Image (cartoon, rainbow, N blue to C red; front, side, top):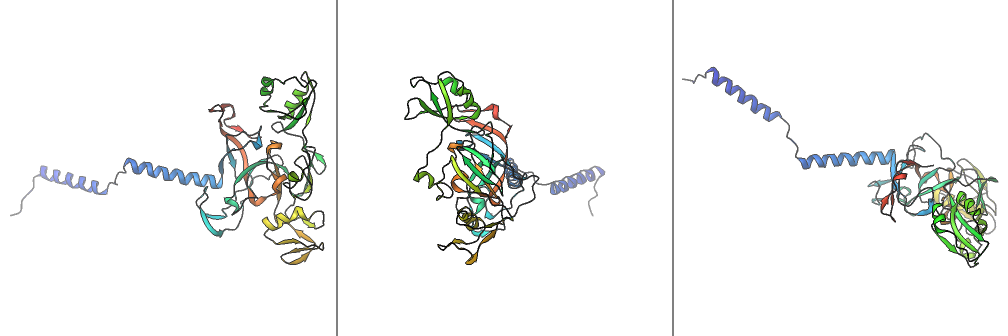
Length: 366
């Protein structure tokens, strides 16, 4: 005879069956370690997407942009301003690890702006080796735009013959001529103007220092200062050989005029101008340019007298004019190497004082 359950026993059995069913259907609760791991993976993925497509983060390692940008500044760099550049290599983002021999087409999404004069731009250093997006990052100021002619005359930058004034954050080297050689300039007063180093020249009455134009004008009015003038580098074989191009006899303070190529621009080669165009054509346009001893020119083995450029090029200079390796030394920056526009200092660390520069936090870059 089968056993008959009481109503009380039936209710207990039903509750037990429901509890067993719920326990079977309930998801397995993650451990704390797994939760932290999943959160970390999610954060890495989001950061990779943001840094690849929208904004990237960079640190200023050298004084080439002082006083505008300081060593220890950490920057937000917008890739949206000029358009995000698609990856050129396959590998781990933001590292030197990539698959050699595989290069993807270099394309760029539309941006909401164009590269303009005086923009602070991050780019891959053209003189470096390897794929474009794995080259070292530099930051400089745009001084010359595609299709323009740039010249530096006694430190003064000129575009198509017109003077480009120094911006407030730019500095250069000056010679201070004192009325009395034994007089010492006030170190405290110089420090207040942002001048941290004074060098005595071979002439007892002349000292040399780096300062902004505003600071130089302030020093000009000091007692015992007869005048202050730009310190012009004298030509020398060793110096001029470092310039771009090395055969023109230029110096950092007297340079050019140099024609800057533009996309769609057709140039006619001459004995005077071909050296300006040889490196862009060979290195960035992917063609084989040759200037022959008889005064003729070849591209990919074919005799030519003209060439039409496929890229825009820019002339970059550091704000710290006499402490900057820039386009005066290694030439133009093609658009294919441009990463983005520096827009904000989000953090700044003063290594000398071992303290943050709180006044620079979240400051916009001019």
